[in-house]
Image (cartoon, rainbow, N blue to C red; front, side, top):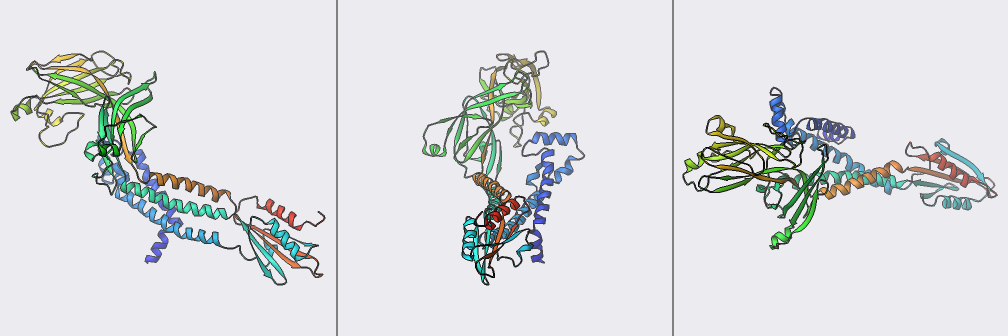
Length: 508
């Protein structure tokens, strides 16, 4: 039973079926939002389809490529391909090393055949055959009183097949190495000198580790975003994103050298350092607020706000403050402030703030100032883009002011606290990727295409000649036969040229 199961699993038919199932199973990943890409879209799907989303979630459709059943199909496909490819690889090795087959007894039954009697001896006829078949792999064998010549050409086709199958295995191993030892993380870095060091997973906003990565042995390089420039077309479509990046390699960091190299980071031009790649995925804005308490103490807050409209970069967020110099825990907790609302890089004006263009042409922010307990001390995590709605519902957090502000504008709360909108800073959304199998995947992918090209373009063909002395002993009967090992056209013309060269009379 085990032998039959293995034979069935490693058959080409099973491999094709599993490949079809893998493609079919991957369709929901393209049609449904994925948690690894955008949790907000998943939450929106739950809100739009509350009757369907829980069932899909239990089946793993919102984290499809990490679902056990998807991994099972992928694993079975990999086992099937390796079990299917390796025996065929050995067959191709044997085919490359094999000598041309023995000349068939009846060459007249070949698809291409011809015969003639030449007015030359058998030695001269054999020399003519050897000379014409230079470049072919050939073997001469005795055949009674005469001799036969078996020749074959197109062995590079088998080399292409061999290269294709070995590259396919290498490609699978490269993918597996990337999944086991690679990682990928995203982080938001402020323009104007914001830094990120790849020293641990706590520095990331999101982090996806390979199966053999625990986040304790990352390459310790650092990047600093000195400046960021976004250009837009008149219709609001993005034209270019450019980040002036400075970085230190792992060698610089470990040596304690305060030396920064520069790199112009663009969407299709990642920074490559110490085997890692730093990509620019997007950008947004971070409004900067300064809060001045009645006693004169100030706190400035600047944190990224999340775009809610990618076309105009209308953004929402929450900048949170704690009162300075308050030692009483109860008073400190109940006098926290949060500046929440919407930010428009190019405001439409009016009482309702909205954005009409993604560039910073006329920035304006519509804010609600909340005061009370933000829930920062209860040990539960909360989003940096909004306040805890439970605190608002319970009355522990109340709105004390609302206003629309332009840079430099301010509002005063009932207790004399002043909230000033200072300006806006750009932030960039970076992705750091490490894939140790990337170069191997590239090399094997190129070799795979090269092997496939050789196997598709080169024709494997065979040619036989039987030389038999005529009855008078002074002449030679030459029989020719040809066979193409593929159905591609073209060998008939080549055989005709061989026949014309070998069977022509000396006078010709």
